Length: 209
Image (cartoon, rainbow, N blue to C red; front, side, top):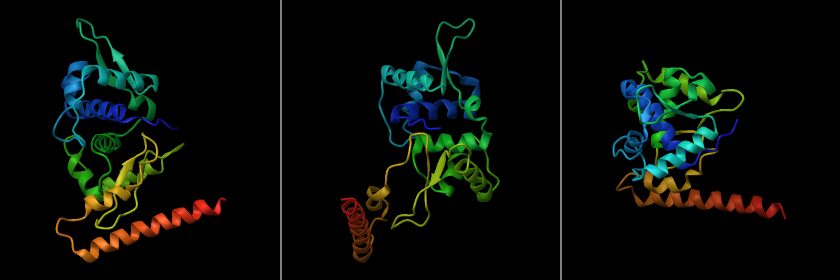
């Protein structure tokens, strides 16, 4: 099952699931509330400034994929919106929390995920979180998360969701991930690793012809 959500759809879906888990008293969301949620400056990477039309476009795309629904509540003049992940996947609360944070903040380490899901679901320890990640990574008929290869300059591998398809290669992350003040030798090693990867890719490409 492939969804290939674009950046707008992923952010909108993440905001809907976040508010469902963290503040159910204010859920489902009006378009104005959802736009504000998408534009939050905390717990969002990257920070965006979208208008209602942009967010509504994302909602339409999610509805076409059966991942969101438009709701008309009795006594309310404002149309509201909710996600349909539970109908599609029957997630546990922990699975939903992990996917929510990945949708809102991109690839993260298990330690970051445990800390950032706290408001939505409290994992007893890192093993409990890893169990949830493993379930999502081995889910049938297709995995919903994957562990990325650890890049130079980082201590832990990061995890990414697959609702937007295969995550982009992290070559560009190497530089930003390197600690400030990293030594020259470490930076040279990073460049050498990147060059080696490019050479191997070129050789595979040339072999095809």
